Length: 327
Ligand code: KG4
Ligand code: ZN
Image (cartoon, rainbow, N blue to C red; front, side, top):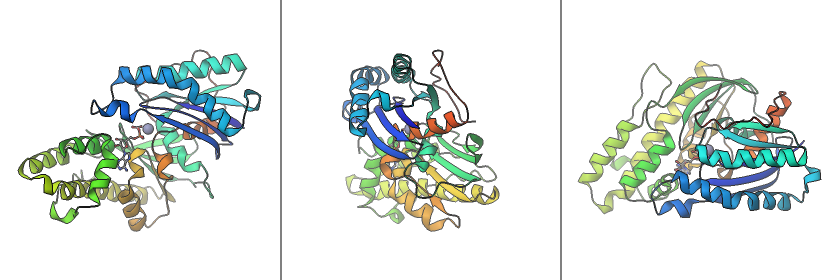
């Protein structure tokens, strides 16, 4: 089954062609990073206007790069939420128009579920259940037990900032610009995490997370430090986030008798997180390649394939759900 995936939940306009939820034929991502960087963060109205300009060319490019015409396509999968309402609407309405115009089946996809399904793309061995997945993106930090396709049990979540949001705010505090995650990772390479130890919120007895105390501690420390300390502060911050994410994910996976740990979402592109998770986990760990961790439409199409397999089919009435959750 060859699906067109469309993803416009945030600030990337993306389209992809994927076969059987696994083989990527094309994966086009038009980033708006440069446009939003001057504001220091995403401006929702600017994002939707940009999606409007780029969405159709990005879909055309995805088909061209896959060497496909409309007659070669078997369905359309589109992100219906969570995300920015105005941004989601552009993708969903485009997907509806394509599906209606070309007579193709349509499926609405949960963006968080799509992040998880990035682990099925180009995988030499498909993930085995039960597994525990840590989803770490700009808006979410969710620890999820997955017993089968489409079966999710939320074990823990952030009580305040999401992991990616914490990286973005820390980068702003340290004057490292936007987006924060890659900037903190880069600055950390020149720093020594042991020079600046920052607090970890363990929330013992719970699988939840909290990063706002860490952010405040970083702010206070940064006010007492100079420009020479930025790399050490970035490294200290990254180490604190990574240690909490890794320790709590492994504890949850062992408790649930999971066979596998998955990482997903933009923060899973972080090299230190990938390295420490693999080093410390007694269970096998799967992480998508970095380009499939951040927002893309190949993961939307992969997830859509399993939704179609499960019998889901959406029609003209498909609505965006900006606050959509997993499960
Ligand atoms: O999954 P994603 O692309 O979009 C959302 O669904 O939110 O995640 C974006 C988040 C941003 O907060 C960004 O700073 C963070 O992922 N991120 C990283 C890295 N690359 C992206 N955080 C840490 N290290 C990275 N290398
Ligand atoms: Zn995302």
